[in-house]
Length: 315
Image (cartoon, rainbow, N blue to C red):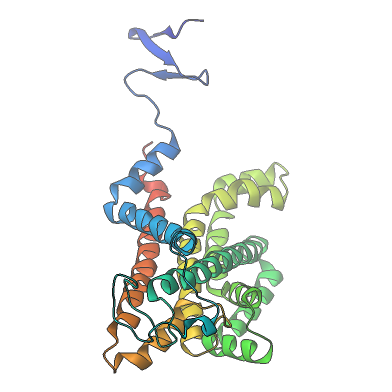
């Protein structure tokens, strides 16, 4: 079959194209793939593109600079030969902290733990919240009532107080911090996804699928989840930023990752005690990186929400 065919109509002969999938489309009105439309909407947001580049650079630096710029970050006994609270110099571009650790290397060393925990905890948060919200909203009835009342009870507990209590009772290992932040941070996400499930289950195509004998699991997988992807992706992005913030809050309170590892919150807490002595390099560079990372993730979330918004796609 040739690459072009002719179709007859009341107006005469119209030339149409055959795309690689074998679908006939008018030459004058070519169908644009949905993924390309979403990418175009996302790329139109220049701040989001800059944020993606920044997050990639920071992530690469956190995981590569400890190898490319090797410094002692785990054994304080090896810092006795270096000057503590030293100002920036060629040997130490961002100086040293109150323990003699190289500040530049420590920022990225702590960032490795902060970003890893943030991404993993955020992933757990969105997976659990999505499953809970979809089941509650789509099943409805008594199940929905019981699940929402349980969720209301969880939401009534001050979140930071709950984290402090759990970490104080148990331990502060890296894995436990990931689990406790991930499995306690999904409550708000579940309410958002439940709202989508409540709306979609009452739409015509979902009711038609039910009338045709489709199972609830099939409807959730083929209808509820694809049409909730906008909120899921957006909430997932914000969950990563929230996890980094909560880890930093715990570290600032002295309940972060245990030594010899560190995180950005623990470093900020140590830096605030030295800022009054004029050692600005122990707080300002780290604070700038920390704030920019959180803001960049939020910008990416906003752009992804627009990219998955169905009303912005071409018909």
